[in-house]
Image (cartoon, rainbow, N blue to C red; front, side):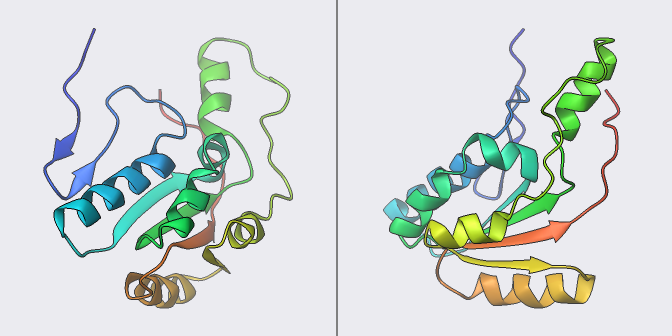
Length: 151
């Protein structure tokens, strides 16, 4: 069954299918599209640390094209949605869904991005404001708590 995409032209884009990892390369596409149309604005991509791993190479493309993207990566150290699906499908305990020790900011810097880890809301606010005017790709990693998705 094909559902209508959740979009508002020019300001908010989301996948209608629930594909994991879609947000990272989608932000690159939106920023490249903006550049092609002569639109100057930052693009904000909000994504979890697990989903970020599905297409992390997209930040390299963003950095190479010097795109004004602010990625906010919520770091809960697990593939939360996959754990929730495992519970839904009555297959809890699937191995490989914990992601301890990932240094997302270092990976992003290795791909050429500006990147920071934040611990407080004040740090997040300061770094987000700085990223909006940085004129380049920034990855802000925010520590969050794991929680089961309500599926």
